[in-house]
Image 1 (spheres, rainbow, N blue to C red):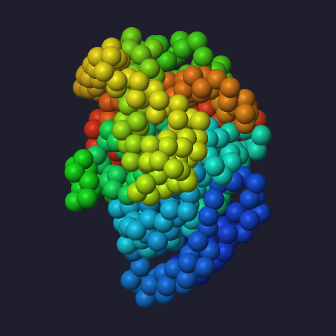
Image 2 (cartoon, one colour):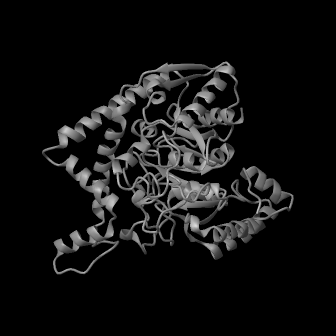
Image 3 (cartoon, rainbow, N blue to C red):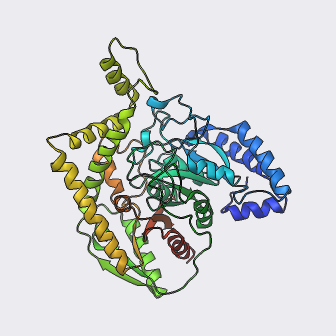
Length: 470
């Protein structure tokens, strides 16, 4: 089937009767079947999606269809969909069916998007390579020997492989932007509080955000207009619905670039070259580049992992083998809880729970958790200060290009440092969008990310679109 770049193209073809929602669903299902070894979709809702397509085609004919008619969407396995399985790619939740839908899913369906199925991910969204899943690793469609990034690796892979037009992922420390970079697509981490987390299986509640991955900035904009905005089920969701209108101004902009990021010892040479070329293009357009210091860069990853593991330790304590989820047979209640959690959680999840429990323990709370919260506060202040003097922060999305499956499994801390450029936006809560800035080697692209003021997604996307198109 045709590899559409945007929903606008799809809707134009539907109106011209060159295709239909039914044909689109059939086409995506064929693509998934032909490349099932990518292992992006762990479940497709074939009959249900085809039935929905028939109904939406009727609505289109009667001119009563919603603004997302023709959009075929995949959702990450940690986003709940009523009467469908949601397992967060964990043995702990295998077989669990949600009794309600996430707010983002309800809002998509209300505007006639079709949910095609659920997508693989790192277990409980803990990972940077999509290898930590009970369903096995997802492969990068560009080169199947390589990882697609994580934890939303399958969301990025599905978009790149043309298995769906758009996918929803979640970003706790870069889990939308890093896989978007590895798969050469666009990914947005919204401002914390712009998109409801109701129906999201929690990893770290003060960091998690749901966001879209797509081939087109325009698709991200229209989907954000639908899924954003205040939700009565999530008291932390305080943002207004994102503006649908594109901000079109050619005024001179100021971009802050961190010296420490450009001089980072682990920065791939090809990524650095493409990033510098992007800076040069911006300067040629009359924009200002300010090179500034960020001494806290080396503290970002440790701070992030101390705080997120602490929150994970608390959030995942509910999976005790009693109320719901995986349960083993045992003679005593203590043994039942211990063995159920040991068998139900994978190694990476166990590692983070143990680390989180450690930093929250009485003897180490002040030494680790309290200190990390203070550093987070400093980071928030610094980012706010930088953005008060500059329009955007511009940094590479990832220091590296994709690596081979299994290459970094023996060293967890090596994987953690894949997030060195992405965690800042989660620590501060600011929005960030990742986009390709040029092909480098083996078909892979280097990517950059823009970080902007709170709730400035509309402006951020407009700027990213201009950089991509120039």
